[in-house]
Image (cartoon, rainbow, N blue to C red; front, side):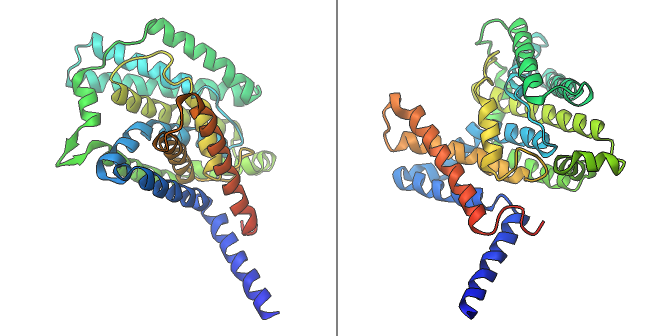
Length: 333
């Protein structure tokens, strides 16, 4: 009897730990995938390999973060990929027209941030203020943003200034630039976790009616969540521009559903009120590690998409089973 009680206590303790830190199953899965990558391709876990992985999937990490702030409140944004594409082409076109120098790059980046935030606010107004279904409304705005991107740059291929992409792929004090970006992002996310807005978004997602009755401005909070989403979409576009060194009006199209998958892999509830941006970052890493592992094991090209999809599904089920096996995600809340 004492053994049963002890085992139940340990399971309950682990369940409470996961409820407090929902990203732990995603972290465990990411570490397992990293080990498998290292087994099949030892260079993938070297500094060069990790730098390349981070540089390639930094945009997806930021996009997963963007999606998380919307999911917190029980919403969803299917336009994140289109926003990335729009900011990407606006950034490249403005940098080209303004000369491609240092000041023009910063001015174009400021314009890109403004575009991303404006797109987010538009989504927020349409969904929260006009009370349209988020999944349908953001699908419609994604088509609109894609059309704007094609109007700004009808054909892909306009090169970004050399200074921009060399900075993103370069080194400072012999440390890759992307690692500085990761440190800045970690500090930013830590500070944002302390903001009242984060708690308010989670409160709205957990019980919107209760939040409204308690006096919270639910509509304004949801709009702010979409604005944050647009901001991080713009940051993701900067990373894609630095990685590809060019403008492409359709570059973010495939990333939307990846961002949703990363959020779920990170332990967030699409119904809202539960999750962490850290978990979403690990979810994005899981997708990146799966993609690289599929390549390293020598999967034929015609089978890669199938295997990647199955692997992501297995990782998602593994994360859910870990959560259920330790007492449920919401235990101890």
